[in-house]
Length: 357
Image 1: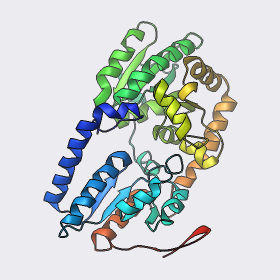
Image 2 (image 1 turned 45 degrees about the horizontal axis):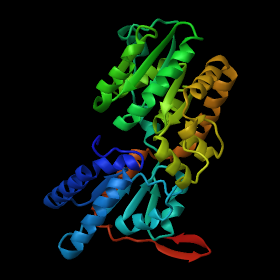
Image 3 (image 1 turned 30 degrees about the vertical axis):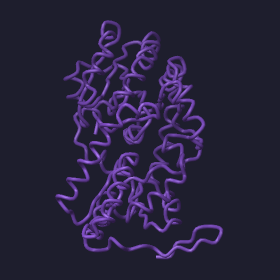
Image 4 (image 1 turned 180 degrees about the vertical axis):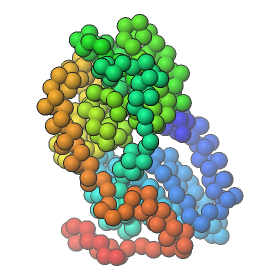
């Protein structure tokens, strides 16, 4: 995953030869295995290139007919709305995490199902030991724990660690007995450790690996500085006040400002249509703004509590009332494997989209 997990515009170019090779290898494996159904997950840039090449090849070899289900709809409502038509051309069924995404794809004849966000069950199933985590990482009971999440991609950690370090040091100069936990993943563990090692003589820091350690850190945190992404939903689930940060680099930031047409990047804010979680993105991703936001959330219990109450309320929109996201997704994949790969909804477009199943 680390090989194809690239964010940005210019950042993708150096990886293209490797990505093309992985596409060819993936198609070869699919054809050798001949599954009853192919499930592609997220990463639409990679998946669309894969499916385009695969569909073209399969048209020449009519014997290969495998229904495709894609999980996690590309965010066409944020930028490149034309991608919705391409998704409908390449996949047979789409599963979305957000309730309002269906209309973008059903207008193009693609059967689309809202299954709910997996975060609502993943966090609930976690078995945690926050007291044991404190002992293992030498965190005192009265410490103000701040969790810092600089991302899981090399390009993200390279850009965000220097900014987050300076923001943390600014906060540590004003807050007594602060302890910083940095959850990370194996693919970038070493560079994250190197990135923060020169701070350990000034601010106590523990870099931890794995989902359970990350959740234990959230359980005892007063604040988080988080790279924009799904982790924000996890933080809301644990009641951790936070802000999100992100930057691509100067030139890619300028491109993003022209292409992205939505008001917000955070899912909570998008669903609420207002800023509940502070967004310090692109040109706002500065050490001083991050530190100021952190101090507000640490010093104003009213502000921090208001953020969590409102965000938790919005989170209810990410679930179906009577079935878990994983169960609903499994039902859909089983249906497609059972021979419903050619099902298409009847679509009638008269000014607005009307979908009749």
